[in-house]
Image (cartoon, rainbow, N blue to C red; front, side, top):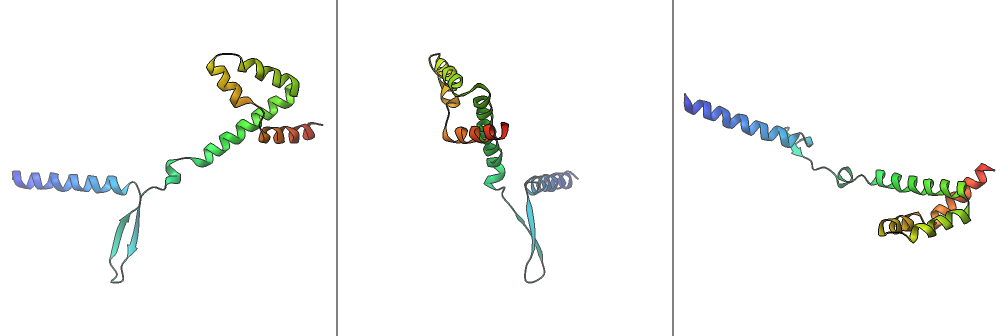
Length: 116
């Protein structure tokens, strides 16, 4: 009686492990002899690292900088960035992030033409 209970628990644990690995993804394929075989799939690197989200974040940040640049004007924006660059190391890194790059300048030019 004890042996059958141990065998049952062993089979149950094996099924639990199989279920956990198959939950990550699987594909069923039919072999030439007609037997259906399950193959486990691994998640793509794209699913692990959200590259699309990172690109949207960068574009959104450039649009944000361009909006600030358009609303303040070039001289005021540069003066505030220069003042920020004189501060602590964190403020200096913020000034480095907020400096006007070519992409921000291009987007700001497009926003200025739309605003007029």
